[in-house]
Length: 113
Picture 1 (spheres, rainbow, N blue to C red):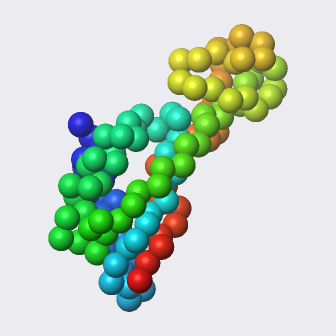
Picture 2 (cartoon, rainbow, N blue to C red):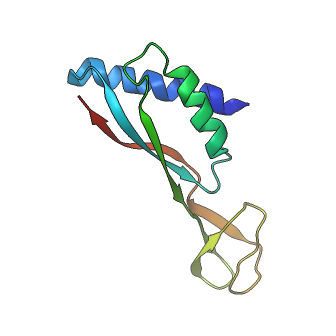
C-alpha cells in the first residue's frame, strides 16, 4: 500500500510548511488527485489519519479533489479526457496519446491556525 508512504510524505510537507510559515495546527487540507495518479483516495485518507498522529495535522480533515485524466491525441489533434493510461481516444479511437494532465498528486491548500 504505497498510499501510506504518500501520506507520510504529505505530513512531512505540512510540517515543513508549519515550520516555515509559523502555524501550529492544520484544520483542513485540500489535495488534488489525478485520475491517472495511481492513488486510491480512501486508502490515502486512512494513511493520512495514521501518519498525522502527533503532528500539527492530527485531526485535520482531508478534502480530496478529483482531477480528470487529460491527453493529447496525435491522430485527431485534440485534447481529450481519459480514465486510464491504456484508454484510446474517445473521439477517434486512436491509441497514440500523450498524457498532459491528471497524473499528479498535489497539496492544493491548507486551512491553518
